[in-house]
Length: 157
Image 1 (cartoon, rainbow, N blue to C red):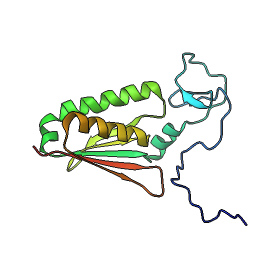
Image 2: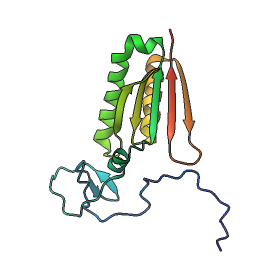
Image 3: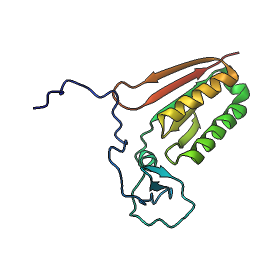
Image 4: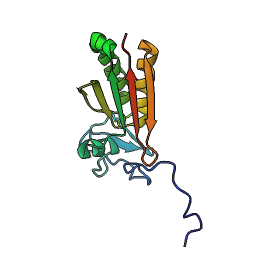
């Protein structure tokens, strides 16, 4: 019997990598390589290790995002292309730094725009950037059980 059985984890991430993988393992989907204890983009297209799906590719395959951004309001309708360009730029920059920070999809919904991401921190970065650039109302809702964030941005005027 464990003494600490009543201690709960702060957040469970079913796609978190609790153990180290073999150096040189590569993701057959995105071609990222596991080096130095993390997934990186490699200059060498040929990987020496065994194939292993990275957590971002597993999330995309399973359709299980780590973060969602919902943007809405009259301001979004007038400036949608400009706001979408900012979001895509942030995602491009994040993906260049880390293979695990990716967009699963961006699509219009009945309220405005929905962005689903493979990384919860990337969702927060997008929310902060949109708020800094366009003001409005920003709300963040973190899941208590899983590593997941849902972000709502709204501006009417």
